[in-house]
Image 1 (cartoon, rainbow over the protein chains, first blue to last red):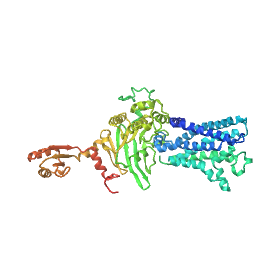
Image 2: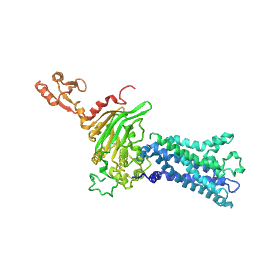
Image 3: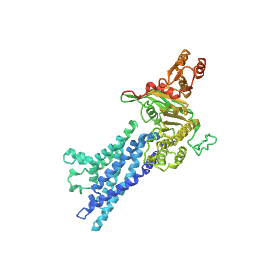
Image 4: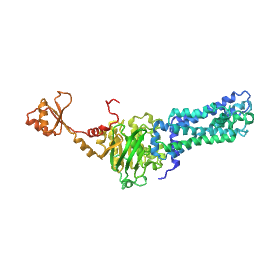
Length: 255
Length: 336
């Protein structure tokens, strides 16, 4: 009997889908993120289109918090309930199991991210249309901001997933995930050279650069944004490192 | 094959209906534990443990709490890595299989489920991960009697229901080897009876059934073979009959008499050892070394009145207690 990876994907999808709280939680998060865009746009006195309103920082941070935590739950709940032992007896190939979870979480959160990013832009447009200030999606920077906001969701969900495997304890994982994704960028403000470097290595900073949260880079001092390349590297490195560490950990540890 | 009360054979089994069932290929599937050792820091949980569990019978895995039973089961299942030694199933480490459910079905701890899922969803996810057709979910739920509650959240299940669910999960892949850790905990009497029949039947089908417990009484009626451990070490591995024979050496007879002093003298002279049973002056004696008929005859010869003459069969429980007395991890009443 061959061991098919697609069977693991289907199994993980059943696990996510079969929790009654899943659709409610995800719907709530979507509404909250999109609502952030509406309030940001409404509170802009100039009635003009700003990328930072359509893809608001409040919305981005809400998404980071939710995706990181819910991503963590997909793994940490298996540890806290002890289900991981049942699962591991069924699937002794532990690395495949983590990778299957990662693939399912990536797919789910990419779709959700797209819905939230698209919804945020649409709501912002709807508000602006009252003042005839709406812009098309071809407007400079809009599509990149849409992609960056979409991908922010799987990036953070994978970081949470990896931390969940590494830490295995619910509350500690939530705190660590939130601290790493949301608090570290606040802690390391771009005041000195090295704190600037640390700040630019953060997911939140990378997302801000990609959506031009504070306006175009030439209007903002270079210390406030990482480079475009740097931002993309951050987007790839964080989830990759989190999942890689998780795979190494499950292979070496007792379950 | 999962209809109640039918013993399947290859003759009546249509190959298309249950394609992954090959009873003949199973014979000889053994669990082999060799010099298995596990240290947790300075504590030794399992200490150079070696035994073999063979197919076609129910093997009980006995030991007081903390003896290392669960740790051993986890090492057999590849969940914990041994500090030294090996554990194999059919000659290979279990963890070398990318998917496990068709090789070994295991219930380690019935509480280790996600309370938010329904029984059917829990089993579906397990089945799907091993490429087992989803109709098996319905079959095993029927097998363990949970069909009615298949759609209900596991969180609302009693421990006995969770045990049944865990057993259903172990049966999903129709495996040649089944391992259960304390499976009857929390089960009602009807459930205990059912689970005994199930284990007997699984063994009769040629499977290897390995069953841990700290309750000897559970094994008397269920197991053919015993592996007894204490403080991580093997105490004995033998048939239940041989083990019970140890118990008969502990056989004692309870005698009630108003002439306790006289009877004690007579019985002692005949080579028995006599102790007062219960509180002093209760006029009951516990006699070992003489059978009841001899005691009765001696009493008659000496014109001693008896109220009671009861053979107390030392149970497997007594043999077990006697054997493991030195290796109880947490003895009661001892200052620690």
